[in-house]
Amino acid sequence: MENKFATCLNCMDGRTQLPVIQWITSQYPVDHVDMITEAGMVEILSSEKYDTKLLKKLNISTINHGSQMIFVVGHHDCAANPVSDELHQKQINLSINVIKNLIPSLPVIGLWLDENFKVKKL
Ligand SMILES: [Zn+2]
Image (tube, rainbow, N blue to C red):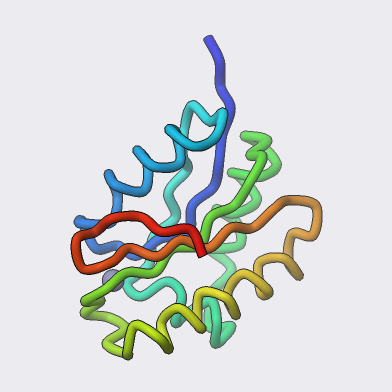
C-alpha cells in the first residue's frame, strides 16, 4: 500500500474539501491529502496570525508523514475572509511565502477555487 502524502492548508468551508483532494490526487502522485483547516486560512497565514497548533499539524504532516508538497487554498465567497477575489489571491501568494519560510525544503503551491468551486493553480 502506498502512502504518499501532501499537505493542504485550506478553509474550513465544506465546499472546498472534496474538489481540492480530487484535484491534488489527480495532478500529482499523491495518495492522501492531510487537510489542515481554519476559517479563512489564507487571511490567517498571510497576516502571520497562525498559532502553535497549526505549526504542530504542519510538522506531523511534513515530518511524520513525509509529505512531499504543501498546498495553500483560498476560495470565492469565503464567509471568514470576505475580501475581493483579487485581494484573496494576493493573500494566497503572501501565504505561500510565509510557508516557504517555515518549511524551505518543500514546494508550496497556491490554489484558488472559483465561483463554481473549480480548482485553479496560481
Ligand atoms: Zn472560506
